[in-house]
Length: 332
Image 1 (cartoon, rainbow, N blue to C red):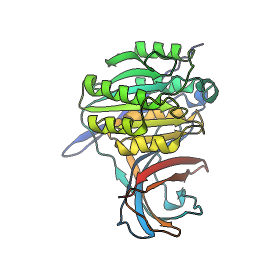
Image 2 (spheres, rainbow, N blue to C red):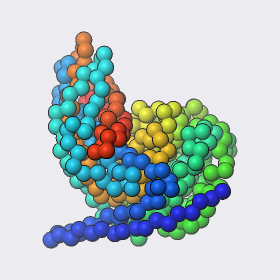
Image 3 (cartoon, rainbow, N blue to C red):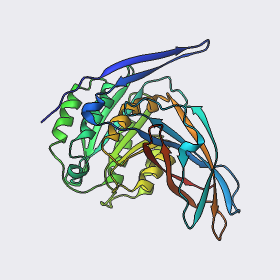
Image 4 (tube, rainbow, N blue to C red):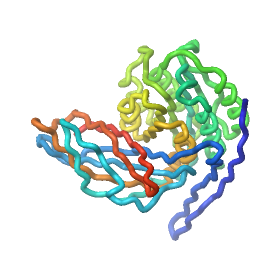
C-alpha cells in the first residue's frame, strides 16, 4: 500500500558582493518515517610521505540531523576511530570547510537495488519514501533519471525514466518497485551501465550517479576496478548509499573515494530519509564538512604507497547518538 506525505521546502539564500548561493531545506515528516541522523565521508586522502611507521591522513565528514540539515558545532571529542592490533589512530585536528559550490544544475541518475534481501533490510520501504524526498528536492535546473538492478532482470539493469525535471511518473514507479524485489546483486555491472548512460544522456555538465544497495556484488560479469575505472574515465562521481550490516562498506567507500563522490552508511533504514534528503545539497556542493586529520601508526612495518587505510569514524552527536562513517583511501 502506498503512503503519501507532504514535504515543505524552504529556500535559504546568502548574498555577497561577488556571488549568491541558495540552499533548499526540506522539512521532513520525520515522526511518521522514523528518520535518523546520517553522515558521509566525502573525501579521504593521505597527507604525509610514506616509508615511515606513522603517517597522516584526512577525512572530510558531512553530518546531518534526522531532517537532513547540517549539524554544526561538533568538536574533536565528537570524533573517534577505534584502534586495533595492526593500526593505532590518533586525532590531530578538526576544522570546518565549505564544499565547492557548483553553479549549474545537476543530472543525477538514481540507481536502486531491487534484490531479494531488500524485503528484510527495508521492510517498511523507507528507501522508496527516501527516494521520493530526493525527487521532491530538485532545483529548477536539476534533472534526474531512474534505474534499478537485480539479476532477475534481463541484462541486470532496467531504465525506468530518462533524465527529466518531471518526477511524478518516477514516484509512481517507485511504488511499484516496493512490491517487486528478487534476485542477486550485479552491483558493478549496473554501476557501469548507469555511468555510461548518465555520461551520454545527462543534459547538464554536473553529472553523478547515486548508487543504493543493501548487499555486495555477487554477479561477476564485471569487477570493482571495471566500475571505478569507467566512472573515472567518464568523470561521473559515484554517491554510494549502503544499507544494513551486510553491505561491503569498503567497496562502497572505495567506489565513492576513487570517483570523487561520497559514501553514506545506513545501519538503520531510518537513516535513508536524512541521507536522501540532503543528497541534493552535496550534488550542488552546498554545505560544510568537518575536515578530520589523523595519524596512523602501523605495528611492525612501514607504510608503502598503494597500501589501503579502511576503517570507521564514530561521530557522537550532541544527544549521544553515534553515527558510523566508514571510509577508504589509498596511501600515496
